Length: 339
Image 1: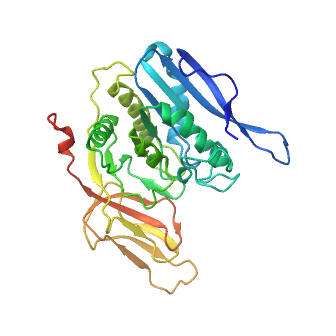
Image 2: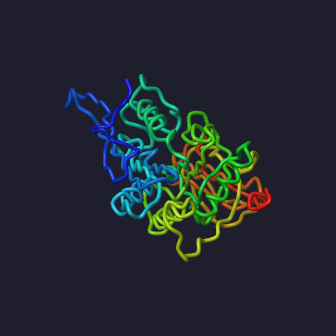
Image 3: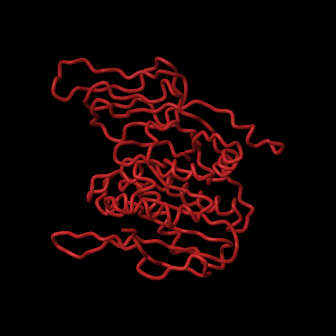
């Protein structure tokens, strides 16, 4: 059964509406209970529609905080077009502070386009896809490293076959103004919100704005400034005279970009995020917890580049991503006005 709003929300009517999606949730404490997933819609006349989502993973917090603040601050008369805000996309996971939903154990960002007859996560994904994504021109989905990773703050985009779609995405990412913009090769893209949006020819932007289960003044400012920079770029907010910080475009190579832990233990990082590394350089060590006499395992960079991600906590298991290295990429062709 498809989910519904608690009220008769009209996306075609001007105004500011704070609504919620009713998600049935029967528990021992509440047999006919529901979770109310907040959705905020602001519309003023004709113009683009942009969808902002946070809390796709429940242990990533810049998005939920920045979008909750946006929902309270933005006024109807401020905009031209429509802004849709979902600050807590995987609401049960946000409430629990976990990456996956504690209700069904599923990853929201591997559940799109969803299933109206599936589990809670699949039902939410289906609703968001049908009712929100499909009426939007642009989607910005906020992520960070969660409890397990920490990123040098960046926007994330993917290689798209359609040149015009790719160009519009690159230009939008450039205007967001994060320190880095990372053309990311996903380890597993099936079921991602990213993929569902991009397959429909829409502009999709994601972020990785820190992590470690916390929020810093720096990462939150990047999120809040980026929101308004994007709204100005798409002429939903009027332009201003402020300069957007320059972003550095990089990508994660297929070979050598991701480093996994070869054994479990305590990970000692030797390189700060954003610092350059060279092939063969020791960037970290793994110390066995149970076997004191066993030598530490050195982790070496496989390529030259910049460290953009590291483990978010010291204890690691075999196969955990403990470092990601990115290299420069030339995107100048997308800024060519003749293209």
